[in-house]
Length: 397
Image (cartoon, rainbow, N blue to C red; front, side, top):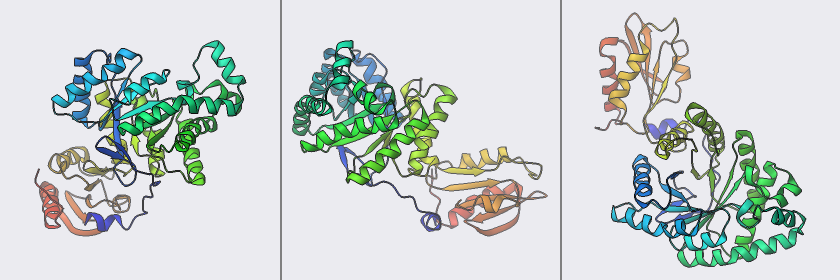
């Protein structure tokens, strides 16, 4: 029933990327779009970082990223990983590295993936270095990048470690800005420079990301990146996120707009929702965005109208009652509509529909077919459950 119904609606076309193995949990290709988050504990605090990582994992986090600002933090990844494994957690770890290539090389021997930022991985932010970087011949700059990247790529090949080339709108190098400005185009060029160098060394276990706190810049940059990859025959998986999105409703809305728009385009292989809260609270938002865009179904979905003067029953109470008994039916889409004016049309992609008919009566739909009419509201929910059971889409909680 579920699969038959979905074939009648426009198909979802995902940008086909290569599969990159992150430990035992591959990304890209036809694999589910992965959810990840990042610890905010002191990385030297092994106990605190492990406990927070476990809370993230239990919430559904599939990759755990940890910042390593110095040598001691990088080395402590061994202890963190050991403690997690001892507690039965084998979730892949990602080291977040910015300024020091040596840290990336150490981390690559410990964790499953290393994130580097092209904007500051090679070209440090001191005044002298910035000026030298800006004035450097572009060919000379690329040679310098290749020289600095080569040891990391060798280590990653030896240990099966993946790399994320993570470009941020707020940290493009002066050299890139002098050529392209602080633009989406500059973000694309910055990421592809590093990707091309990695490819020249025969290293392709790459994930690319272009992040910005401005949703329009983030969306534009990722769409441009996919266009360029199509043109150049590249197929690296994409990590999506709106960086520094904020907290509460603001952070959730910005993340939904930026990430959701790209997912709807078929772009994206892993996502991170960045909100100013404990990281385990990012995970439900991420799964909610995946569900809303229809790219990864993790729960029952409900379609319901806001109600109006035509609605002659308490739709809020009815919806909650239906949720309580059907919330375990992952992948099922159930509509609860106030009346027949818009109900049958607006719920056209639902698997089952509960529609008010007035005067205490309800109509039940299976797909677009009206199968039960003029049912008493008092037992309509039970009739809905019976319909789902008879159709073979029910499973016990």
